Each structure stands twice: as C-alpha cells, then as structure tokens.
Length: 227
Image 1 (cartoon, rainbow, N blue to C red):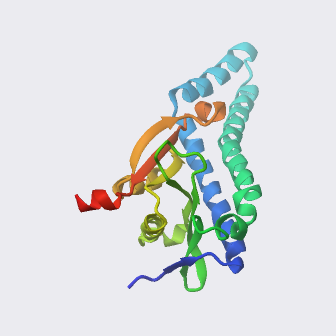
Image 2 (cartoon, rainbow, N blue to C red):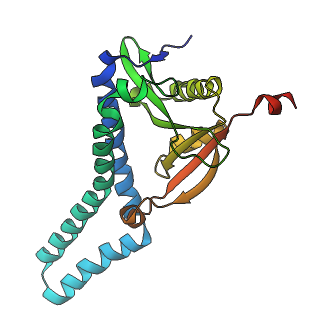
C-alpha cells in the first residue's frame, strides 16, 4: 500500500512547496559543478593557468592561490543559472500558486503528501503558443524530497498530470528540462515521452555544456484509440 497520496494544492502547502522547490534547485549545483570539472576544456584550463602562473612567477603560493580562485569561479558559474531560474520562478508562477494554477480549469498544481508532509509536487499550465493543430499542457516543477525517492512518487505525479491532460482535452504534454536532470529524463522517456529537440538556453548554459531538452507525450484522440 502506498505511503503517500496525491491531492490538489492548498494555500496551507505554500511554505512546504516553495521549500521543496528551492531544495531541488540547490541539489543541481554540485552536480553541475562536477559536470564542469569533467569537461576537457575545464581540465585543460585548470592545469594550464596554474602552470603558466608557476612558470611566470616561480611562486608556489601564487600557483595554489590561482588554482583555488579558478575553482571558486567555476563553482559560482555552476551556481548562477540555477539561482537565476529559482528567483525567476519565485517571482512569477510560484509567487501566487493559487492564482496562477488553481483559478482556471486548464491548469493545476498537485502535491504528494506523506504523514502530513508535502514530499512531492508537479504542476501544469497550458502552452500559450503551441504548434499548429496542437493543444499542449506543460509539465512544470516535478520534484520529490530526497528521502522519499524510489517509492514511485514521481511516476504517480506524472500519471496524475497525464490523466488531467486527457480529461481536459489536451493532445500533448510538453516538458522543458535539461540534461542535468538525469533521473527525470530517464523517468519521462520510460513513461513514453519522446525527445523533440536539444538546444542551449543561453550562453551561460553553453559554457556549462548543459543543453535544454524538450520532450512531448502524445495523448491519442478518440479516433486514434478506436483504431
């Protein structure tokens, strides 16, 4: 028997939902930093700059300081885009979840609750400018508390959203994510989402070598289901 249940967002969930969202954003920073350190150009940079400093100054102290400074800069680079994204969400759609998600029939925000605590979230908004002939619902803010992962909560949340999309008459569920969301990407594709494109959000994401990935889940029409 599941140790959690999924329900619609309530105002009393607000602090827990925002805390879970911010925690999820923070989790991506060390993974992004490690990803950057493994890039060949970063390794070359980390070796080349201190070596140059040593050859020019003959000072081991300056060489060690330059290495430390480079690592600090790289850590800040890994932190910056996630904090910008977090701040953007907190002042836009997450600034008033009830107004932005619960006031229209075509959007919604769900939480997974376990023992009175919010341990997972997912939300849905209609895509404002979908491709011609498509009615798309965008999946947003899928997150599960670290200590509750591996229990099928994320999959249950996505299934809840897909069923909502079907009832509301959408023909596609759309997701924007990044290649750093390893587990989420694997989950989406295992559930039938198809990768459509892979590009960089901006120059900072290109520097980090973290592209954006777009995926869609096709909801068959009544005619297609009858075939």
